[in-house]
Image (cartoon, rainbow, N blue to C red; front, top):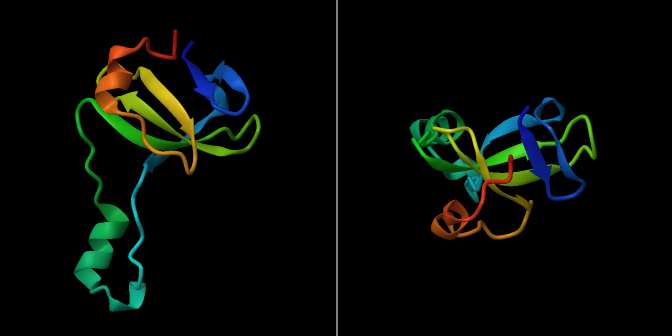
Length: 102
């Protein structure tokens, strides 16, 4: 079973979590000034890279809090997890460390 390291309450089974999509996506400061095409792009298009990606996760069956994670989309390994509002860890440094799903 995959264990995800919640930054608030520690390692828990994956069934307790829900993915909320790509992290660190900034909303337009003035949404009314954004055209339909740009607004649609903001709402529906994501990068979806092959490799390490920053994602939002919800610990729905635990503390109920959102956090961010760096996850390798190829191996499904969680490289790092960190609290919402904290800066994203350096991807290269996080990739070089031991994955947190061991």
